[in-house]
Image (cartoon, rainbow, N blue to C red; front, side, top):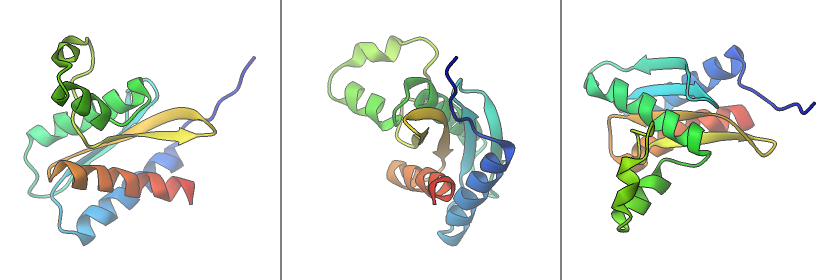
Length: 135
């Protein structure tokens, strides 16, 4: 039987704290969601002043990145590049930049999704959370 890594609650707490700290230092009002490899929510925070809709969007970005085993920006790029049929893909609703999959030993073990600021800033926040796990 094969074995693979997974996100522990300690991992989730560390990544959420690092992402939240990065958002705080930069004055970003965002929602941050962390999911497992199946897209199930493991950790979440919505910072003060963040729009309520960002809660939903952050989770969906994370889920898209986890299930697709790639950054959600890849889907946005495909759609913007003309492959609009991709909008009909079932389950994936967060096909916008800001969802980043967490890779450990070649396995996507989950993802972080962020919503509330510019797309590239959302992705930066997510990557700050992941960096805490890999350092």
